Length: 373
Image (cartoon, rainbow, N blue to C red; front, side, top):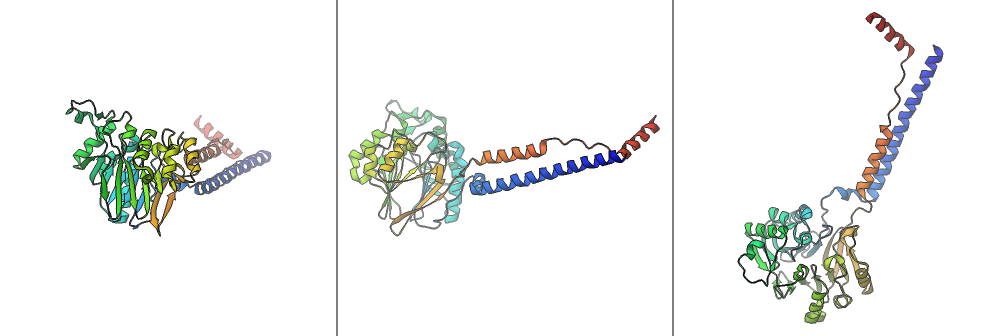
């Protein structure tokens, strides 16, 4: 009996030490997870949007909102008016709306004065559905692309007609909300508190590619210029060079079509020669192309991308452009969390052997069985 009790005690000690090992491993995994989570910027993973508020209350601000593979640019002018150029795709609509609403609230503003839909592609205008549903907008500049319903009034075939339900929904919703709608075209000019906004393109009502109907906008404030190019390709870039020449020189360029090699020709970039080149792209994609990046390096532009820098805010101070970023996590946080949970499951999920009964318990159980008989 003593030997059996001694053996049982050893098993008890073994099981207790097993639990201690599991607890120790759990503490170790948790500590490593917390350190990696903080170092890799994991907090950003749980935010739908991180406001770049370093320039709060500055008269002039330009925000490149991180919407993955799409464009969305928020501008505050010195007269406290605001403009949103594009709104990402539909899945990013809540992100854009949240960013804009938080921005307006912090700046003490109540609405968007202007929304520019550069062209009908979903990665530029899909998020406008959510924005229109949640934020008051006065005026919309839209491409001269007619919805299928609008096109019924035209007998002329030489017009661009929407081929996507997304674009039709955006334009229909804008009409429902009573927004003032204006077709974007070359020659439109807005003077907004010492800030000049010029539409350099489109000049035609019809293009074979919807990318080329993109509104190309030059923004000038003080001595600095910002050039926003939508998704235009080399054809439009060449036209802009022939029409505007050195006037295209800008301090900041929103690189066309997410850095696709169909745009940003060597000739165009040499004329614009931006100090900063901003690329609106998603991580782990084929864009921007290596060729475009090399061309930007050749003209000594500082490259900023939403895939690595997150949302980017710019302003002008002492006649210089300064910027702030909200970097994305440097590691796949979802993968980190998954590995951590899997390690905990492996640590605690392996079933422990059931502890054998003590001899006295066996005797008691036998007595109970006898009584039952």
